[in-house]
Image (cartoon, rainbow, N blue to C red):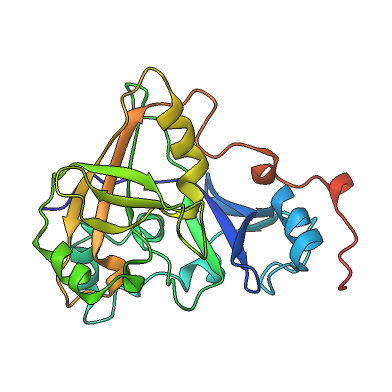
Length: 261
C-alpha cells in the first residue's frame, strides 16, 4: 500500500568534492506560486574556497536568482519519465501511489545515484499540523556491505525499529552514522550525510521522542540504493531542519571572485 506522501516546496542541492569525499550544500531550489526559483547558497562560497567549486552549467552566475515557469531541466532530468514502461515499478520502489506524477514528489522520494553522482538534491521537510517532523529516506552505502548482509536485509519487515550508531572505525568517513535494527543489530546501511546535523540535534534533545523504523523493503530486482526505505519521526526542531549559514541564499555583496587555483 502506498505510504504517506510528502509534497515539498523547498529543496537543497549539495555538491561533492570528488578528491576528498566532502559534501557542501551549494544551492536552494523552491516551488513558488506559478514558478520555480533557483539560487546559490553561502555554502557555494566555502566549496569554492576549499575545493574549487564553480557554478553549474545550467545556472552559470553565482549571484543570479533564476526563475522558470516550468521545472528546470537540471531537476527534471533527475526523475523518471512517466512514459517509460517501468514507471509503475519505479513508483512501487518509492512507495508512491501508482498514479503519482507530481515531479516534486518524485524528486523528493528518489534516492541519489551513489556510485556516479557528485550532486545530490534533497527536500526540506515541513512541520505537520501538530508540529511534528516526519519523512522517509533510503539508507546509503549498502553496496559496500558484504553480500551476506545484503541478502539478510531482504528478510526484514516494515515497522522494525532502527537505531543509529556512529561508525568510528569507518576509514573513509568516521562521522558516518550506521543504521541497524534495534533488536537483531542487522546493519541496513548509512544515514544520508545531509541528515547528520539534524540527527545529532534530535539525539541530543533531552525531551526525546525520536523514532526510526523500516518503512519499506524492496527485493533484489530493485537497484541497491532503493533497497531499504526508512522513516524518522520526532517533535519538530524549533531551530529548523537544515540550519547554518551554508544554507542561506547568497547576497550579491557576498559573492566571491571565483578564480580557479
